[in-house]
Amino acid sequence: MARRSSGSSLSSLPIAQLQAELRRRQRGVGSLIRRRDKLAAKLAALNEQISAAGGSGGGMRVRPQNATNLVEALCKVLDGKTMGVTEVAEAVRKAGYNTNAANFRTIVNQALIKHKNKFKKVDRGQYTAA
Image 1 (cartoon, rainbow, N blue to C red):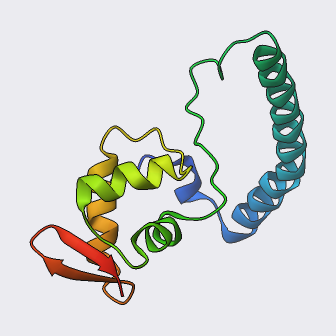
Image 2: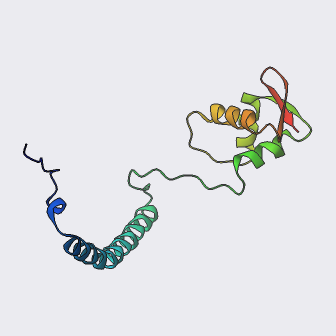
Image 3: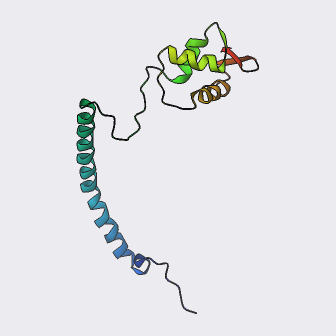
C-alpha cells in the first residue's frame, strides 16, 4: 500500500532541515514587524489628514471613547432611582455616554441582567442600583 502525502513539502524533510527552516522563518519576523509598524504609522497619518479635511475614518468604524464603562454609567444613572430599560438607555446617553450601537437598549438590558451584584430587578423590566 502506498503512503499518501499530507500535501506539505515539509513532511518529508529530516528534523535538522525542519529546524533550519524554522530558524530562517524566525529571522524574517523582525523585518515583517518593522514593515507592519511603518505601514501602521502611514495609516495613522492618512487618517489624521482625512479627519483634518472633514472626512471620516475612510469607512473604518471608530468606536466612541467614554470616561467610564457602561456598568459604571448605569450605576450613576440608577442611583436612588427605578427605571425601565428604555428609560435607562436614554438617561445614560443624555448623561454623556457615547455609543454607535444600533441595539443599545438590548446591550443595556444585558448589562442589567448580567451584573446582579450591581443592579436589582424591582419589577418586570424595572431596575435600580443595588
